[in-house]
Image (cartoon, rainbow, N blue to C red; front, side):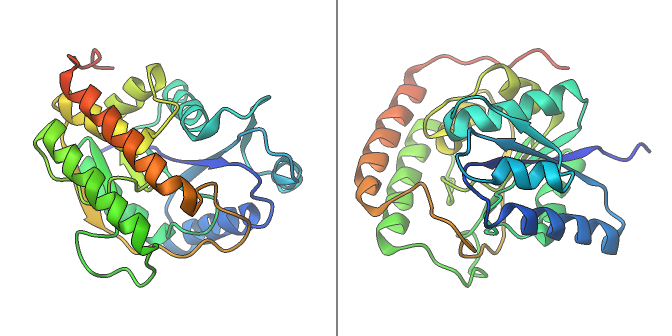
Length: 244
């Protein structure tokens, strides 16, 4: 049986403090476990030394001329995955929050044809030692309720950026991917298109350096807009892309 080609898509904006360590962690894991997880860093118009560090250390990278935001950066990664014929693509943060040890766990349901999209979740089991703020956890729960209303399926970790998707979804996402609130909106759209979505328990860590792009004052604004967008997803008609 052919070994599945797996790509880790790492969107990066001003991650000079983290990106080299994140890449070396993946490479060390590959060597130790004889795995073959490829990497592509999408440098989303960083104004720091992210690009320079990647080029100096031979880290595979695509430099975007302008900052497109997380949605545009991730879609670039999916386009790369599609044109290079990957079987599975995994979104993986470059700030040290995602644990490379859990990649095998989130790709397994796809390898077994049990799911098209697998979300690494902090909330399906209580194994996570790092907790986000109370305000963010509350917001995630509210978004989860709107997600269930829009799709009839309960998703616990609606904002998780640690996700794996199948070859068919790689093609789908390469064609269309939202620029705002991409994780909850794409999950809802995938469910409306009748793809199979599952969550697996993972542990996440606190970012190791730099600053997050999400600030406390944005939480209420983010939650309100995501909920409105999910209502829009509920009333739209969707159809799956042709199989690749």
